[in-house]
Length: 113
Length: 115
Image (cartoon, rainbow over all chains, first blue to last red):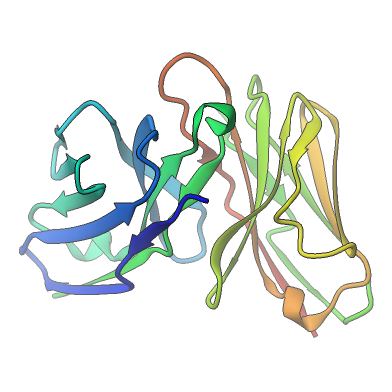
């Protein structure tokens, strides 16, 4: 089955850039997603990228996709303490399971003031 | 627009009791998902429905767990009898299958503690 992997923790200082990495196994994924989970809340969609794109920028967020290496990253510029949360990457399944998402374990981002 | 609504937000009960978690998906969404989140196992998909019909329940842990979707605007996840190892945060999510990107929208979850 599909496998999505992320490192568990990342710690940065306020104002620095954060880069959260993700690897996946299903090369047929159409979209790849980044979700953010704040304490006590559900997962909130941050951004997504279509599989035929290499990069997508959305304000402070930059998503890079290396389809050959099946590697996805999320860069947060000028990281703020409010960015402290758990970040999940996810891919959708193959055609028959297009709406079945496969989530990574989540990366806990800690932003130090 | 209202998002996915789950109730209760918190539930504390003794082992052996029946627990019912509720979810109202976003109006017009035809897919509904139930997830469980724990520190040990992360986010696990338990079951999902399409047009109120269960499509994949391979993630349901055991027969103590059951899920229903009697109509397009309501779903329940029931645990009977409950055990301490069922303690987790349970999320419901919904989406609308269509052309192009259709992300899943999550509720705020039910934090379940079985004593």
